[in-house]
Length: 310
Image (cartoon, rainbow, N blue to C red; front, side, top):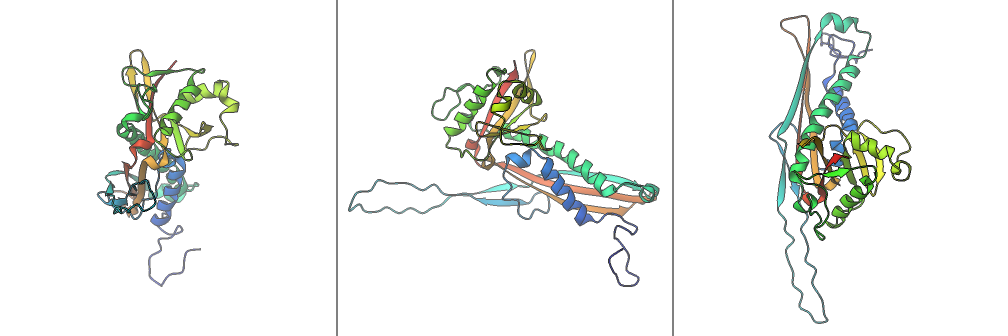
């Protein structure tokens, strides 16, 4: 039954001429998108705020670093002002979708069009946004968290570099994952909230190894749509085929990113979903806009494992 309305007022409910309610559709799509995104699992979204259009920005206030001083009885205390500059998260990325729903199809359809379109739109947006984020993160990794001499303290951990990737096998994959954990340890990165994103071939390697039962822990059910596999050495592992790759001789190397959620912030908003009557045919036009931004706020909490399959 449609919502009561004043006589003569047009009916835009699901039983009227237009069977899309933009606000509901946008909210439904946003929820489905976040369930599917790897990006949403490996970043923090606490600064999302009110995002309306591309070009907006979110002001992030950073926490000042306090100085700890030695004390002796009678010491004159020195006071400092806790100041730290704010940083700006620009909402400068965006994707749109637009489609036509023929009038005859809409009335004769025996399926829920909103459900079908929101499912597909969330899946297609997932691919675009995940590709964007997984391409961005390797470019902002801290210098001590990548390469053949990684480690802010030790400087002797080899996790691969362009031209000389490490080779992953069933026998050394755990060792290299532990090395990634050590890299974060040397940066004093919190243990809770760590992640590692690996390609399908590396995920298969783990599942076939002797680690499959002992190390993949924490999940009693099958992986969800965002590719969550389980946990190894404090890392929640995610499987994605959207990681950046490069050709290394006869091999293909993958940029496997690891770190902590606090390293990168991500903010997304389905800012506009609307329907219009088509001018050149009998039907409706449905279109939507998603805008987002991403920023490395703590590069020291992001690392890169550059590897080929052995």
